[in-house]
Image (cartoon, rainbow, N blue to C red; front, side):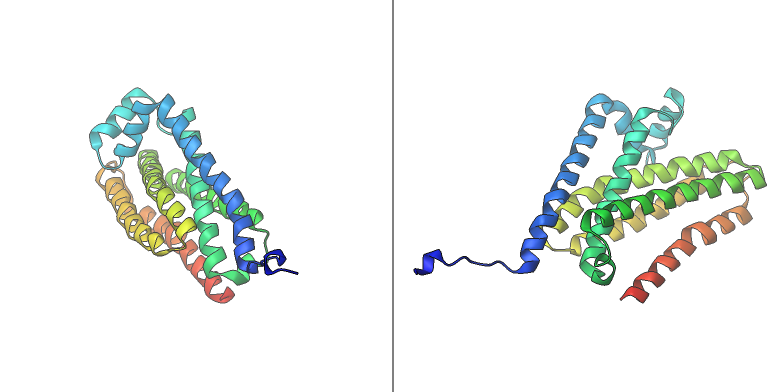
Length: 229
């Protein structure tokens, strides 16, 4: 028997990575298609949304033209944001927390990560509604809700190419760059909220919201990651 007829066996990790990359590629293609549909069908409003966090003029233009977070473009962008966050979290867990990923099928882990991101986002929104009702400050709630969406969308637009680069080059230092950009954008979103606050802004409400919804989930997530490692 000649050497040419002997099959060459690839490492198991390479074969598994190839199978995983198949559906990951389709997810990335769907995200690019979704973003393309938004830009093509509503280019002007999409531009205002991207610039609204950093430009008061763009935000005021959105407020004049429509009610933010109430049109189809926002639903598409919410879906985009959650899927980008889900696939990125999947890449991080499957790479750095193999003990967690071993308990899930790859695609199921991606869906779980996406669902967790969506649930956390809407829990924050529910908490905002509750606190705004208790302290009677609906304008502050609406302002921060809008700025949080603008911040999430801007971060997702930056994160998608970095996630693609990390997935296909295995250089996860791209995600460290995103972490720095996210912190800057996140702090700017809070700055915009405080700058645009209404006259009835309640700092005690802000303290409760920030500690219970912004800090506590991060502590729980870090604790779980440390436990699994």
